Length: 190
Image 1 (cartoon, rainbow, N blue to C red):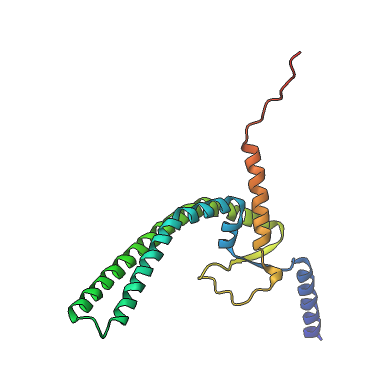
Image 2: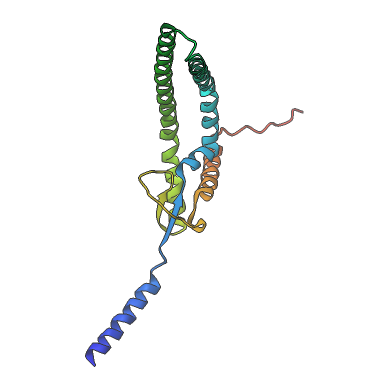
């Protein structure tokens, strides 16, 4: 009898505690999309694309030249002298090595520029995310864009990317309007 009463008392206490605890909400966000799609992120992303487009075109042209030389080597395999084949192979190898080095350099430059943009935006976005998660009772928010966060499934109902972009843009617009100097009222001359 005492065990049954104790069990019922413990169950009642657990139900009371459970009724007072708000439900635990978990959300997911694609932080890279937030960075790129906010108003503050769209401009630097477009600038990076414009800045690196000529280098991308140059690398693509070099790749096409290498492909043309490889085609020339394949087509002339039976008719070319051994010396000319070796010369062409060395030229292809040299151009391929240069392309690889140029591609690595361009990627390193692009990553450095992206890191600079992210270093500026991420703290601001995290502040907005913290505020949004607190106000909306989220206990945990995971970043879908991070390879260290293996999210295998997430319902659309817990996806916060769009909401975070809107919250950030609203916050950014409010803070930028506070920073603009007030324009003096113009009084008509009599």
